[in-house]
Length: 307
Image (cartoon, rainbow, N blue to C red; front, side, top):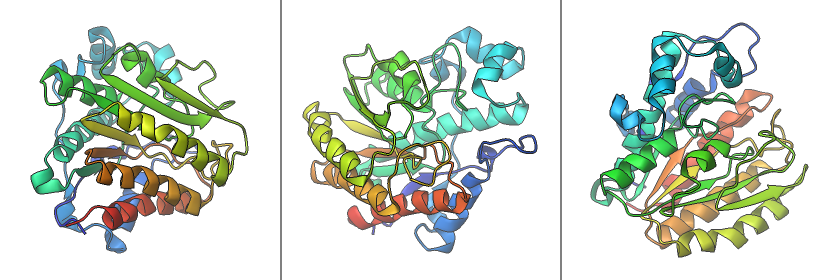
């Protein structure tokens, strides 16, 4: 097992929401607690993320959107699209989540200390556009990380493998025209967002798609991602394709999600391409199934990547 895996987590990732809100905010702490309790991660492998600067954020977001969100003068219509009530703690949560993505990317690119893999126990906020958030996504953590890495010439090419059940319209909106970024999205064809923005490759899966169809689709597409020769892969490891997910509409089993994770992470390891994980979505009932799926992903990280 890698002794120096860096995984980023902050208590800021959890904010109070109104009673009955459908977003499972508790899952972030539950995932962290389960990873530690089951011995998947040691406390020494968890790191507090930094907060990104305004200039770093403006690599992917407009100044008007960033400034008005941070100071609370944001258009109420945009907040309705996001789906959370505005608060200072939400501002801090959103910034910390981006910082976690940036720190995890830097860690993955440092194989001397981290074996080319790292993660953020939040993020994957792929519905956020340059000038507005939506779908529980305020800022686009991966887009901010990618564009800053390219700007500072830490990488020449990046790939995003987005396996959340929902299409990454914000990723495509911000990064879709960039020739140095390859975006693969596997998602439910009839699920949110209902107006999809084209990725490099979109795989639209029918309602009820099972392990066999899902894994065959991924197996067909992954070689194209690696043929792009990315210097870093961002893995949006959402577990909402799980059959029990309330918002998923697909029918993957826990074993199917494990095979998915193993397929991608094994290729990253064998091809020597660093990979940074984002937690992504998960809305199972009970939420313990979502937590188990996220924890399983990190068990597979530890299984695949050597000391």
